[in-house]
Amino acid sequence: MNGPDYAALFCNKLIEPGEYLAKLVCVQQFATTKGKTIYQVEVVLDYNEKPGNGTRLSAILQPTTKGQRFIDAFLVSYRTTAQTVQQAVGRFAGVYIYQSEYKGTHFAVVKFHQQPFLAQEKVAVVEAEVSENRVKPSTPATGIIEWNDIPSA
Image (cartoon, rainbow, N blue to C red; front, side, top):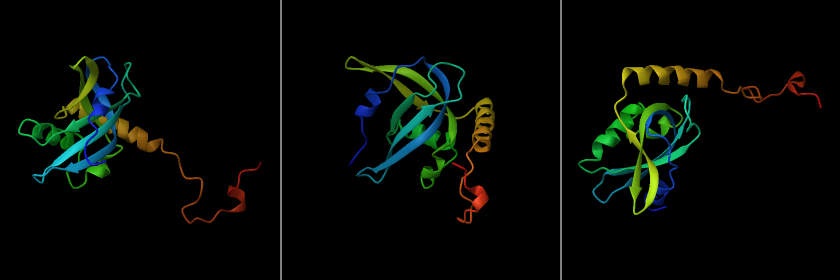
C-alpha cells in the first residue's frame, strides 16, 4: 500500500459516543513529500463496561497544522515516540469516540487526547492484568522437551 486506506475510516462501526479504553493493534506510517509522517492506526475497544467492546476502529492522523496535536496526543497516550511507535502495539489508552458523517455515510471516529489521571490509573491496572494472564509457552525456554512435559494422548 502506497498510502493510508481512507476507505477504512468509513467502515468504522457506529457505537455510542464517549470515553473508551482502546488497545493499539496496528500502526502504519507513511512519509509525506514534506518529510512528515501520516499515521494509520487501528485500535480495539476493550475493558469497557459498556457495549462496543471488541469493536475495531481505524484512524488516520495527518501532520497538518491542526492535525499535529492529535498525533502528539496519540504518541503521549500510548507512551511512545515516532521512533518507537511499533513498540506501543498492545498498549492501552483512553480515547474519545464520536460519530461523524461524510456524503451520507455514518461512521465512528477515534479522537486521541491527553490522558487524565483516572485513565492512566485504569490503563495501568488493565495492562497489569493482561500481562499476568499471558499464556505461558508450552515449550521450555531451552527448547528441550522432557518426557514429563509431553501431554498424554
